[in-house]
Length: 207
Image (cartoon, rainbow, N blue to C red; front, top):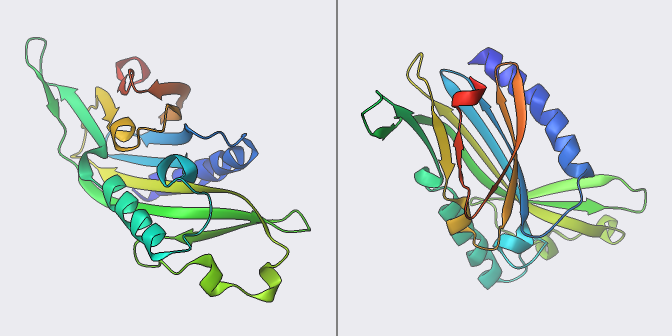
């Protein structure tokens, strides 16, 4: 587990930088899946506009409630599912997993006059609006965009072979039309595109 997390930190640092350089397109989510025979780490970044209808910290109680509801919805265990085949003539079965991390946060990225990025977060335990934390030094900030960041860390039984991965993201967030996903299995890395019609990945060709 320790080696996977070190690898994950290195990879996610690179991917996060790529996210920041990527054009922010409403309806287009970015993500990554790092998978081995015992664990899977998933991170998704979704434009907040596609989930909440606004791209900033919530300002009213209604918007804070809306954020809470979105967070709880995206924390549902079946947002991602792993499957395996036990035999040629046997049906595909869901893989039992232990969820080690399940976080959903609102990340608001601000840019000041010095062109420095500042990322702040709202999650289920911290809902105060940006205006409540307002200070003079924020007067020069221009909000560039906000994202919903989903992080999942799953653990499997040893030597589990995952044949496919599927997601209910598109039914949970109908305004997301495309998910660009970096799939990393061992030394292999491939970029995949998921959408409302194609939301399951066959992993047999990558293992």
